[in-house]
Image 1 (tube, rainbow, N blue to C red):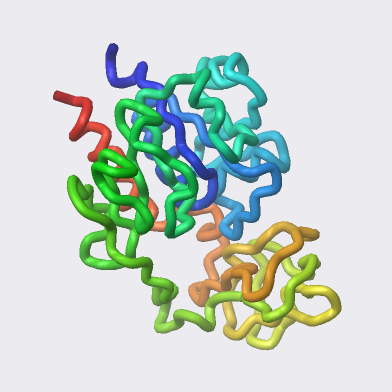
Image 2: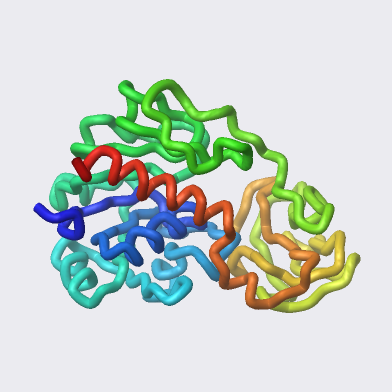
Length: 266
């Protein structure tokens, strides 16, 4: 079997999983993603899970398309697109029999991935142990080790501090202490000033803390628990950033590609 005939299954279809899928698709691998029925993505401009809501999405030149069966997966691959399935338990693995399974849920714990799920099982970030849960781990923390392929042990404990942009960290994020449905007033790509209302949880406003562009924002109408990350303001004010894969995501994706080649290109 040649490398581009490999079947690669990714658990999760959010920002990190989508960056990995994009890298692998651009490298001419056949890749498929699975997610829950109502995924809550913040960086929607670069998340293949949006295909579950809208039927399809273009992420940096690669089309993701909602699929419902193994047959549709193969049809989507033939069209040089990335299939996305509603399959939170990844049951499709029993039919698809992937050569590589990647857990990119980013839950900071293992939600059911087993080392026997595929000939090569890769875990992203914290929550896995090499040899017990997965064959390899790719570090996802924003540290000197980001993207490193781990052949033993575990990844670093999750670092929850937001990445600094123009000296801003936590103040870039949109959060709210209440739970409830989110109603958006602004949209991705809109410019805001500190104090502007971006949306509401119930009847309580969610306000921007800094000036910038709304780079990321959850879908209107989604119900969220307290303190959920609802969005992100980028102080650089560049609209194109809403649809750009972040550099650190590309580093993680490169680590996954390295892990696949390390094990299989021998």
